[in-house]
Amino acid sequence: MKKLRTQVAIIGGGPSGLLLARMLQQDGIDSVIIERQSAAHVEGRIRAGVMEHGSVEVLERAGVGQGVAEHGLVHGGFDLASDGRLCRIPIEALTGRSVTVYGQTEVTKDLMKAHRAAGTAMFHEASDVTLHDVTTDTPYVTFRQGDADWHIEADFIAGCDGFRGPSRQAIPAAQRREFEKVYPFGWLGILADVPPCRDELIYATSERGFALASMRSETRSRYYIQCRVDEPLEDWPDDRLWDELKTRLGPDVAANITTGPALEKSIAPLRSFVCETMRHGRLFLAGDAAHIVPPTGAKGLNLAVGDVHYLGAALGAFFARNDTRGVENYQTVALRRIWKAERFSWTLTRLLHDFEDDQAFDRRMRTAELDYIFSSEAAQRSIAENYVGLPFEDVLAG
Ligand code: FAS
Ligand code: PHB
Figure 1 (cartoon, rainbow, N blue to C red):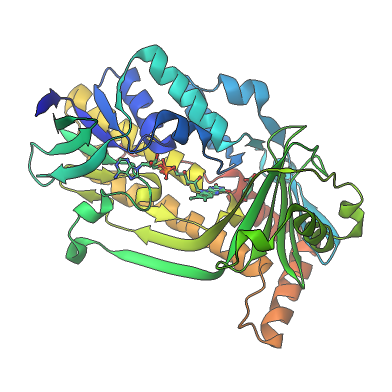
Figure 2: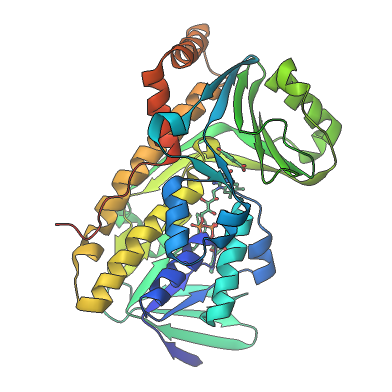
């Protein structure tokens, strides 16, 4: 058994784990990341696409903002579309803040590049990752890597291992407060090297269901349609998917859609989930390990960045001056932001997707809600301030 001692053992080397390690390193705090997959697998994932204003600032402060600054597309608005009728939500005019379109894949690569440059400890292809003694002052993590068995002692463990990782499960079920809503549909996504159909995103609803026109750059597009979650991917050859996108986005937008072969095509299930127990002794959960949102509001990655912004500050204060306010406040402060993002994501998902069990009245309510948003600056301002990201609180306050 090989042994190592660190201040923070981070389980999961996705955006949450990588960003936390960066922030800790900036404060001179030692950490070790333990990741199940290979580095190539982690860097090859295709996930989120929109960074909130506050998330970009967190990346900049963490010293990994160069990529998003050079290659990110700053957007001052996005379109809502209802049966081909478009309404631009001018988020920058309404809030003074914008969002930046910059893929999570690139964020992860930027973070990995910073890690390699800093030479911080990171184990990839770790198996049998197990958390121990998390309610004591000497928690530890064991795992296998290749032929070696490892034992990592730490002052704290950060569970950044996503929805299906071991960290949340290390909290006894009787002590986990969990809330979940599973949606009766998924998103079928396609990535293609074709120019976007518009210079901003379009969230569209139609009688055939939801569609989203997004992008990664001026030459690479990302589109999604609502689909049955159990639908075989082979039922969606590229041509059928492009045709369905054109139908759902309407003729004016369809005229500007450039089709091309899929670089990646996949179906993601949609759920809303919160584990309110984000701290258990010396274990702290961050990112998808603690919560999941339907991607309709572009909040998943941004919530993860928000958690890490709080947790990094809390651990920094603890190690620098034994200030425990942050670690005591973390769960309460993080959950206030998480639940507001859950509400926004659920609201947009409810508004823009066709629910099979909807009655005629429900459909009229959705049409009336969209008509109201299309005609009300107040309604648009509410959407805008949630989309650009609500302001952070001070986790060390009080
Ligand atoms: P992640 O899941 O990204 O990372 C967790 C890491 O822990 C992974 O690298 C995993 O390999 C590792 N891990 C798991 N089990 C482990 C173990 N036993 N031991 C060690 N390591 C382990 N968000 C948006 O905003 N917009 C989107 O369009 C969007 N699309 C998505 C599509 C899909 C298919 C998924 C799954 C998520 C999507 N998300 C989207 C949300 C996504 O971007 C997450 O919010 C983001 O990846 C959260 O980052 P992490 O918390 O680091 O979790
Ligand atoms: C994406 O580009 O992948 C994307 C953008 C906005 C969303 C969801 C996904 O709300």
